[in-house]
Image (cartoon, rainbow, N blue to C red; front, side):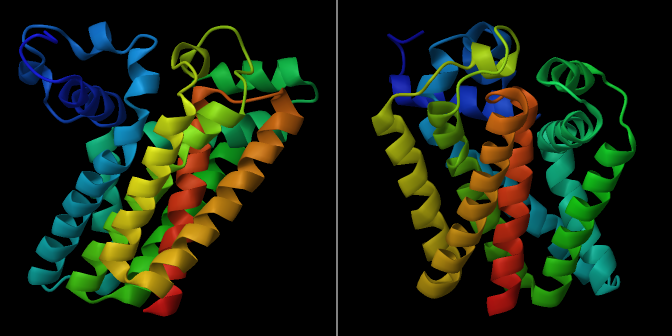
Amino acid sequence: MSGFRPAWRDEILVAFAFLTRLPLRGLFGGMTAQDLLVPPSLASAAWAFPLVGLIVGVLGGIGYWIAAALALPTLAAALIAVATTVLVTGALHEDGLADTADGFGGGATPEEKLAIMRDSRSGAYGVLALIFSIGLRAAALTEISFRGEVLVALIAAHAFARGLLPIALYRLDPARSDGLGAAAGKPESNIVLIAGAIGLIIAVLAIGLRAGLSAAIAATVVAGVIGWLAQRQIGGQTGDVLGAIEQGAETAALLAAAAWA
């Protein structure tokens, strides 16, 4: 397949196949996304994560526009925008946030925490984490309210939050020998820098220099805190932790954008 198109295009397809539920199978030339999601493919594709976030943000903004065009209340339109992004991603990051909250809140030892995180059932901590995550994002979009500003805020938040995931993969060792966090591999430092730069550029172009930098700083701080907690709680990252990092960073970026709006 590499002989028919450049590697960067395959890496973009891998990023979209992994982070979304968009129907991309036909673009893989007969290969399934799972065939490509093996080391080092996912790690090498991590630079494209912010591009995925850009498209997810655009689709969420379209959802908001449609709801607003139907004269729905602003809060309803905001919730529809969030729901659209959840559908596009298959609730991948929300699932990680809920599992991480359950594990960190319910386990006494790292082993117990990891076992809880593998349980598909959601407990009180996970449910509350989802309620706060969705509620805060919807509140931020309600405060922004104008259609164009909602669109660019979603683009900035989703792109930059996903641009932080390669940093987490690079800085945190896998907490277990199997699972997504281990299978993803560790991206090279240049890929981490490219992903962060793309995410920041998209955020600044979308909502302006000061608002974009504020959103980036807020998202980075929250992501750093979650990463620090993961290191202390379970000794590193898992796929669920990566989902929690994305959710925390996305929420922080939207709140920062709302403050500027």
